[in-house]
Image (tube, helix red, strand yellow):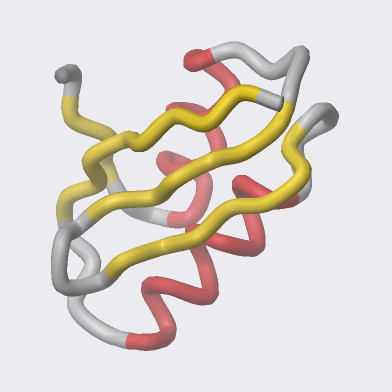
Length: 68
């Protein structure tokens, strides 16, 4: 399993955390998605997903992913 952390902007509350976590967790190949509100990140564990899929899921939740 690979682990990668992405920076997400615009999250301000628990609803934001739930929205991002729900969208990212629904991607095929994602085993888990842990959102850290204070750090503004989502850490994804899994295999077979692409960065573009994570970006699309974050966008769908209403937030933006920062290019690292």
